Every structure is written in C-alpha cells, then in structure tokens.
Amino acid sequence: MRKIDSSLVQDAEKYVTNLLKNSLSNEYFFHSRKHTFKVIEASVLIGQCCSLSDDDLNVLQISACFHDTGYIITNVDHETESAFIAEEFLRTRNIGDEDIEQVRRAILATRVPQQPLDMISEILCDADLMHLAADDYFEQM
Image (cartoon, rainbow, N blue to C red; front, side):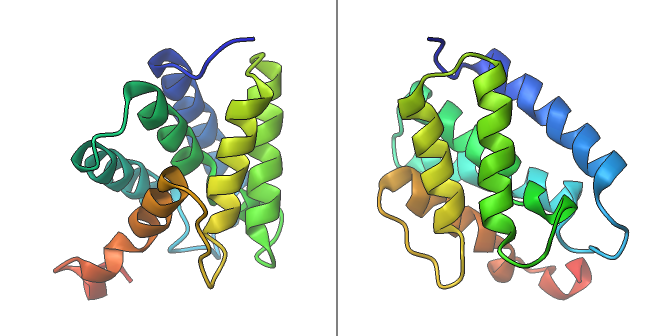
C-alpha cells in the first residue's frame, strides 16, 4: 500500500480542479474551485502552526481537496458524496485503508454542526470556516 505523499497531493489538486471545472453547476457560486483552494491553503497554514507531521499535512491537504466535491452530485449531505469521491480516487492510487478512513473522517466532520474527532478533522473544519474571519468576507460573497 502506498502512503499519501506530496506527489499525490499535486495529482489530487489537478484531479479536483478538473472535476469542479467540468462537473460543478454554475449555481454554486461559493463552493467553487476558489473556495477549495482557499481551504487547502488555510489547512496548510493551520496544520503547520499545529506542528503536524509531513504525512499528516499530506492527509489534511487531500481531505481539503475533496471536502466539497460532493456538490457535483448534490447539495444535500454533499459531505457523504465528497468522502466517497475521495475514497474512489485514493483506492485507484493504492492508498491504505487507514489513510482513506482518516480522509473520510475529516471530510464527514465538516457537516454542520461540525463534529471533529481528531486533529486533522479539527483543522479541516476550522480551515473550511476561515473565510468567515477574512477582512474581505463580504466581497467573497
């Protein structure tokens, strides 16, 4: 089994970019590629401040990449669809069950109300809401 590494994170970013570009309805103004990459950026920032290991940062970034991909299917419980899309991607890359389950757990934790059960999930939840604290919050809408 392969571990999630920085090369896979780059592949996931490309995959998600194309997925959202080609499959996401234009009705989703906020849950977009831009939002996804802001969440990835915020995840890395928070993860580094929390002294996550490189392996955990990679898992966190993959989780952030896929956290809203379920919107290509539904806006109702999109997190479940997002977790499934991430799992499918990771299984095709021969990623171990433990890493896949961590990614699923982090994505599912972003359901409102958020219920993170571990540090990676906590960071993803915070990163997903970080836009609320931005000086340009209203301009983002």
